[in-house]
Amino acid sequence: MQPSTTVALAELTSIDWFTHVGEKIPHERVVVLSSWTAAVAHCNSDEWEQMRLESVNRMRAAIHHESEQRFHAWKQILDEVKRATEPLVERKVAPVRQANRLPLEFENCVQWDILHYCMEHEYCDILPPGTFRGLAYWYLRGRFPCGWDGTPPDGRMIVY
Image 1 (spheres, rainbow, N blue to C red):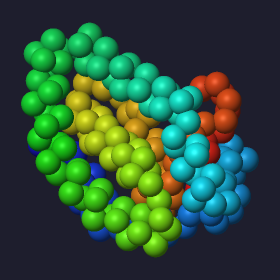
Image 2 (image 1 turned 90 degrees about the vertical axis):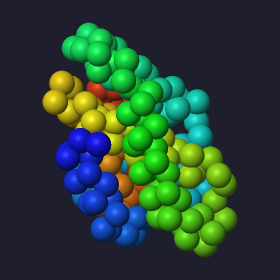
Image 3 (image 1 turned 120 degrees about the vertical axis):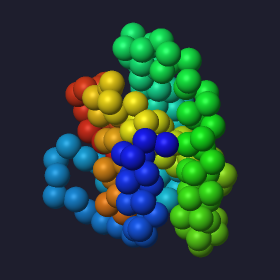
Image 4 (image 1 turned 135 degrees about the vertical axis):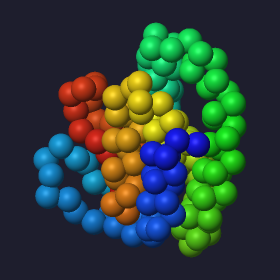
């Protein structure tokens, strides 16, 4: 794993997740939701899933453009990163899922985001920061990024 990925994982490990969900944010470009029900509905929306999938597709296309060799290593790198991210996300999400009776889809959303945040780190020598580093900004601040209001790049982040 790249040193940058190791640092990112250490930072994610050292904090408590979801500690500031629902709190107001004095920032005009953010929509703050008021419940887990609303947050889960947003994270399960087709639009949010499509936006995040398109971000991964753009990342892979950029990697392919920069280095075919690195592009062909994607699956191997992804598997290695998953071995680190999956247990971490499970540990961090389990108490929140249990306390709030959240569906597995919530955990799946977080798994996807954290995995691809780390994949952006794995390729940070050839790619600029992307969507998932932006989402990690919110996770690292105790929030749950779960949607976008508008059409990127215009619009506002939706967080809980």
